[in-house]
Length: 502
Image (cartoon, rainbow, N blue to C red; front, side):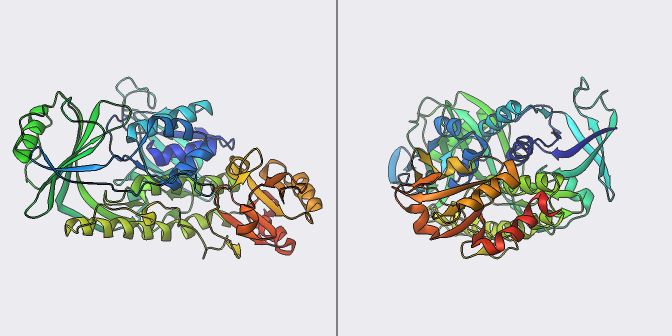
């Protein structure tokens, strides 16, 4: 029986983010995916500003930005006449505190490819065609039964054969129909709207410009018929349409052409190819638990959203970002109770975000005039863990804003799997040396000084000092303030989150 520390089930953005987080900390892992091939469809396509900050830390933001684009203006038509034009997001320029202020459009297949390539750099690959068919846990670990679904047996030995794997922890990132969640018996509360479905397809046409998101609506009822959104770095448009017919749609180019012709009244737009399509029902559900013993749930396995607001993929990525450092910390000797804070922190956040996407979906259903508008509520920069047990001090639990430093940015100092201690002012030089000597790579401590003063990091514009004042700021590996205060409580806090406290 193979033994590893973590087995991740599901290789979407959530599972891949978790795998990268663990791999860069040296955790032994496997990541398995039931599907025999990597997906090709656009699916989710919006990356929120906070998710871009996560991808900055993971080392993939350059390609994400280079191959993505800001959402184009929406252009609404009656036939071939433009009757309205506007934007979903207010245009904003990067600033010191928020380097990624705009939602980026990226088809999900490319996000996953970029994450897989980063994971490969760290020495790991997704095992396709590998399905979890059973697992059982005990006090020391989880025994998982894998079965190959690949015709050549690439996923797990002989085709149809089963083998067992022993792991310390099992992470279920296997989507809304999660086998892991169902096998645990965890409830998945919420609603499935059987009559409210969405047809999505990736189509090619040379007859529409790629600088606008094209939309056709019933002007009398102000209800959307369908939209065609140009996907960046491709020659493909994502076709989306509310679908109310009882029969299943035909997976054919001719079917999509017929829908467009009848709905738009135009004959001058020809589709030349259909590369992918999907039909899904609107689900709004959340798991009752995110952790049962040594088994954890993340992403769609823990919560599924309406498509409104682009929250689902982003919330899953941040589940993994929260879980990764805690899981590796416990495996490295940190107190077991640290892992309890995953559910403590992420379940209320997921509930809050689920409420946002549900409200946006309801506004769209009611055909409200500004239902398409998105604001900072959806960008996830305001989310934090202020009421959690890991939040200590005035700024505890808050997202850390970026800042300009001499020769770089604050995010440069934070990037990586470590805690970061910022000692503001010159009175803590000896403590900084002590922390670096005691905790090694686990905690990187810096003195932060004003311009003209001596320090490891120079706060050239005073942004860090203006935000935190004087004292000590311990920043968690996921970019949130853990501890903010003086020296008196720092040692006890570090005991609770590092191997020193085991």
